Length: 152
Image 1: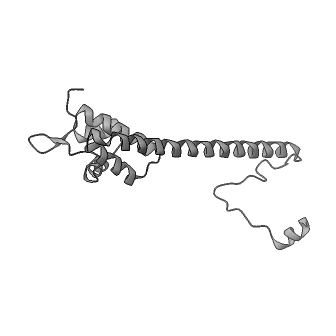
Image 2: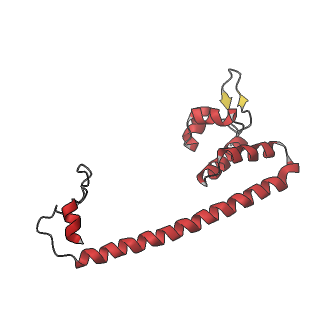
Image 3: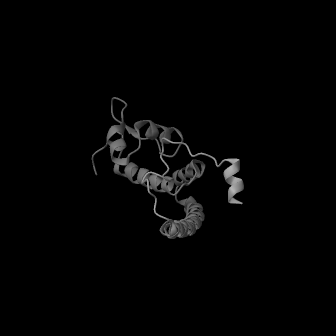
């Protein structure tokens, strides 16, 4: 991509708002972007690649403070390669631990859903099809004290 992109074109391509792109630059996540003669930002292919990487870090829930440290290290050049690698290894381990926890949670949710499916099949048929359904417009009622005593 030899063409320099405007901030609106970058916003469209990345899904970030122009405001967020300007914020990323002020926060040091993006190095100062080249400017056209009128002062408008012009993003190069290398800027787009870096923004794409920042979006990956954001998608993996890297805190912005860590993203800023990583961006500063990147700006300091090749002497910081070991530090950047270490940061990414640590972040990857955190992401993998989060994925493992989410997978465990998915299994628990699937088991609970199956439990309710089995429970539903064992319930007697409902004569009124809307009976027992929870409607978003109707708040759930708490069980009365008498009903609670009856269940004991």
